[in-house]
Structure formats: C-alpha cells, structure tokens
Length: 217
Image (tube, rainbow, N blue to C red):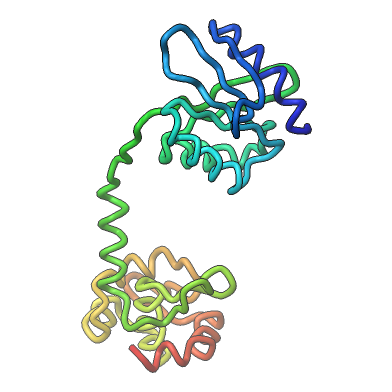
C-alpha cells in the first residue's frame, strides 16, 4: 500500500469517532479535531520505520494525541512495534485494506520492572568468570555463559574418568553440578550408574573447542 492508500481508510475511521479530519495540515499527514479537544495527529507510512517514529516524536511537540498509521506489519514484528509505541506514548493504527484497527492509544507509559529478569541479569554477571564473550558476537558462536563455564568445569574433571557426583561437586566447587549433569543440556555427560557420571565424546570435543575458555577458569 502507498501512503496515499492509507489516507481514506484512516480519515473514515476518525470521522466515525466524530472527528473532522483533513490531510496535509502543516507538516502533518492528517489532523483531526473534535469539539474543543486537542488535535489528533496521524502520520502515515506504508511500513513501520525509524523515520516514522521520529516524525511521531516530533509531532508530540504539538499534541499528546499522535498516531502512527501503517499497513499491517508481519505478525512476528507486531508485538515489538506495539511495545515501542507504548514506551514512546505514541498511538498505532494498523490499516488492512479498508479496515483500520487501533492497537495502541497515545498515553504516558511507565514500564513495570521485571524483578525476576533483573535478578537473573545480576546473577549471570556475578557468576560469569572474566569477560569471555565479545559483545555483539553471541549470535554467531556459542555464548560463554556462567552455566557453560560450570559445565566445562564438570567436563574437565570427568575427563579423568567416571566420577561420583559428590566428589565432582567437591573438587570443582560447582554447587549446581547435579542439575548440570542430570539435564545434560549440551550432550556432554552420561550417567554410568546412580550418582556416577562420565564424559561423552561430545564432551571430550568440547574440552578442545573451549580450551581457551577453560584456561581462564
């Protein structure tokens, strides 16, 4: 859809709410008025973009009621777009043919703090040894988390042969060794008998792959 294709559906949508809407008023794509209420400003774009967001933020200097109107984005992008608009106090109109849906209305936004996620962040920072993963590189190679570091400690000890869990935990200092060996997230460990674990071929390969990280532990 071209930007001009969005105009008529959005205009009708606003008029159905009792507004009088006009296009290209000053720098604004659409301005709508209803009685003595502050103006509603709508910026149109065929797709969501940073340029559209910056336009919306600029229009907030003239009105608190600013909407961004775009053709329906891909479903996987919608939640992130909604979150961004709420954070910025911008409204969001989605246009599908002649149908217009308001996903977000302009309003001040104060994000709720997620104490669980914040706690996990601080815990990971505190337990990770050194700074083994370059920022921005995590998507391109296995990330050296504190969990992986603990798993490597366990793997290094098991490279000497099958070991009892209690012995491994005492000698490595890995308090969560039982869960790491039981869950075997990386496929490095094999249960030989109750309470005794050994290293798998994949675990042996990991010792070579992460030799540099192991040296720092």
